[in-house]
Length: 310
Image (cartoon, rainbow, N blue to C red):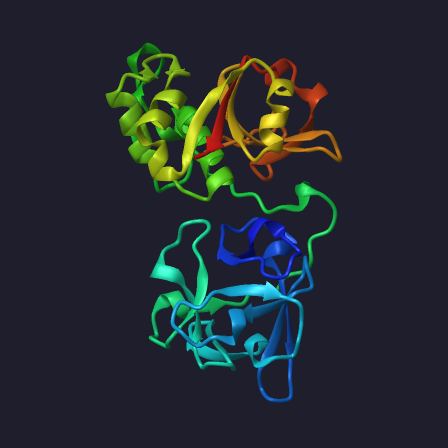
């Protein structure tokens, strides 16, 4: 998604690419002008999308800036087919362009000569401004039962019976969910399962060893933009880590989940459950916001593994 870096309200704040998080930093208002161009303002800041300095060179940065009615802040929508549009700046005839055509979080958005590439095609999604706190953010939860990897072998279960990710993959999918929520980078569950088995972190008849989280982060975390940041024994001990943008994997009786966020205004924590359960209150959405007092019984936490952006 288009995103104003760090949800800044300042003139000059950068326009970048970032995973969908439902915040107003990723929402824009289009105002039609009589010359056939649109002024595009960020909902969070009210600032206009602006071609820096009105320059025409390829690679000129796109940012937000106080509205000034200049041609550097006027954009024409051109249909690119299949519901996508290219956006041309009036001041130079160049297109809004994802630098290098890459999909990593933080990739810069610039202007570049029209070339018809996917890096210059964007889909407009109708939305409404987010209100309230972080509990309004959109949440993606990858399920153990997803047909793309549900049947992938994952060692052996009780009695030596063959296991797969559908039945025994909570340790893998909790890791996938924690990393994706934090960085927007997706670890392929089948590859992580294979790595876990090959390196001895799948304990047959039991589950996934807690050592997986540090070991995989140390060897492969850089590829996905994260690192292992230690272990805690309770969600309270992880609160500041969550508030600083980190995520965690937590162990509750017989299950592993991602603990992905803490909302200070409500005092609630966000759990992402790869195996939806009515007993954990995640049957409907696969996630749930809980008060600290709810982490007891079936949700009593025995360890918390911290993950942070690299």
